[in-house]
Structures are given as structure tokens and as C-alpha cells.
Length: 369
Ligand SMILES: [Zn+2]
Image (cartoon, rainbow, N blue to C red; front, top):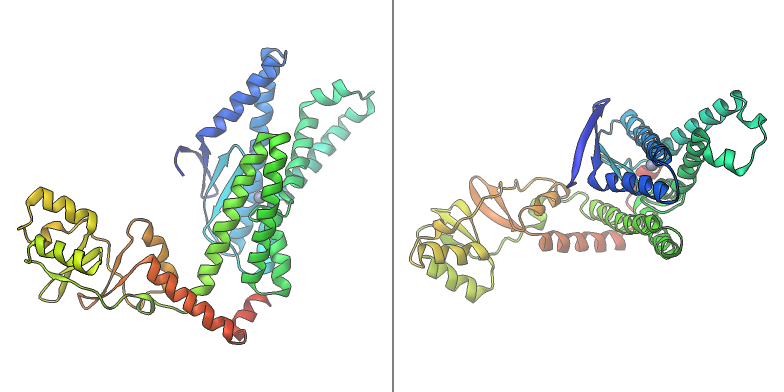
């Protein structure tokens, strides 16, 4: 994520902080000061937020360290104004594991709240005459209330928040993972709309959370659809195997004519059947301006993505599209096909349609058991 800095590394996990997090500190400090408070009040407020975010970090470590028990590593933990995000390398598909990983976060805050309550009880805080002023000015009591709020908020079943994950893990006990994800994502999106509307009247942070939930639910559901849709497929299954290509020494003008006549925007270049690279439409225009239309085709080859093995698992390919929309499939140094997001998607639809007409495979059931 952009605008984040690593502040510390604990138990092998980087803890990062997002720039916007500082805004929330300034905002809380300023609002305390402007509401007639002193500098001390402002600083206490800032300290309270910092301590609360320590509790959020502890919450995220609850997720991360529980995930580690199931062999899942965590890339990093990032603090955002709306809370923390632990980037787990993957989400456990086993409902029991997902339940434990999701529940571990809020459980940490329950433990912190219990500790604070015990501390206040032992210190005799509750024995004094309690009025609003006493309650609102106690640092530890505020932290206690904040932790309880954190638990309740996280338990809202808005996937991909913790409550939503718990919901999916319950659903996945009685249905397959994909269906459970679809339902949890739909519930999450409905709650995101409600949260967004509530945010307009109550607290603008709710709107941010609603946006996070809306897009998070969508992208996670999509990832699961993709994983299921691509199950058992390899690169060879999704590649385009009929395409035009040019020889390395053909002039760029001919490449241009070919692109125009065929509508193929990416033209592979070969030399004696050995694959050299791909000329992308934008590179072709630039090269013709730079070196002229009589220059050889190989002059227009741009930065080359690494070639894919035809037997590579298709679900591993998707992340590679971030930097390149067309990927060459290479076998024995020869180009045998091209893979694009569209060709993968088409193959996925075909796979899903086939899966839909067949009775559910026994292999999928074992995921749920
Ligand atoms: Zn959490």
C-alpha cells in the first residue's frame, strides 16, 4: 500500500502505519483542544488514541498468530484510520480454522477489556461516588469502553470484517465454501449500504468503513469464485492458440498493416520459430516514431514478461496480469499460445457451467467436512 511506513517488526511480522493515521491523531487532539480543553486534555486524547491503536495491533496479532498455527504467514499489519489490517497470505478454507482465526482478534480485545475492568475494580474505582465527570475523565475506563466498542463493531456480520468471516465459517458448515462466501458477501454489501447511510448522520468514519466493506466483500468473493472456477485448470487450457506473428526482420510497416488488418493488438515476434517477444500496440506506435517504419520488428519489442509454462496452474497466473495484459506461453523456446485476462475468464465460465450441470463433485465436499 502506498504512503505506509514500517515502524516495527514483531514476531517476524512488519507493523506499518498509513499516512492518514496521523490525520486521525491530529483530528482527535485538535477537537479536544477546540472543545475548550487544555493542551493536557488534547495530549491525553492523543495518548488515548495511540493506546487504543496498540490494542488494535494486539487484535491483528491475534489473527496473525492464530493463522500461523495453521501454517499461514502474515505479510504485514497496517494501521489505517478505520483500524488495522493484517494481510494474511491466504484465508483458511476450513470453516473451523477460519472461525478461530477470525475470532482470535476480538478475543484479544475481550481479554484486554477484562484486564482493564479487573484493574479498575481492584483500584477501588467503582467504590467512589460515580458521576458523568468521573466516568468521562478516566483514561482506563475510556480505554475499556473503546475495547468493548471494538469487539461489538468487529462482530457486525459485514464480510470481510471479522463478524462477516464468522458468518461465512458458520454458513460453510452447512454449504460449500463458494455459496457461503456469496451469501456472506451479499450480507456484507447490504450492511455496507446501511453503514454508509448511518455514517451520513452519525460519524463520517462509518462511511470509510462502509467503502472498505463494500469493495472488500466484492474482491474477496471474486477471488473465491476465481479459485473455484479455475480449479484443476492449467495455462494450456486457457491460452489462445491461433494468432498472427511476425519474423524479427520484417519491417514495422508490415507489423502495422497486420495489426490493422487482423485487429490483433499484440503481435508476437519470432526468429526461426524461436520466440523473441511481443510488440504491443502502444510500443509499435512509439517505435515507428522513434526508428521509422522500415526498422525491423524486433526493434519494437518492449519489456518482456517471463514466459508461462503450459502446465502452470491457472490460478497462479492471475496476479501476473497486473503488469502485463498479454502473457506468452512458451514450450521448448517456442511460442505456443497467448494468455489474456479475457481468455482466462472465458475458460472459467466454461468450467463453471460444466460444474453447474454436474452433480457436486465429492472433492468439494471434503472442504466442508
Ligand atoms: Zn479483526
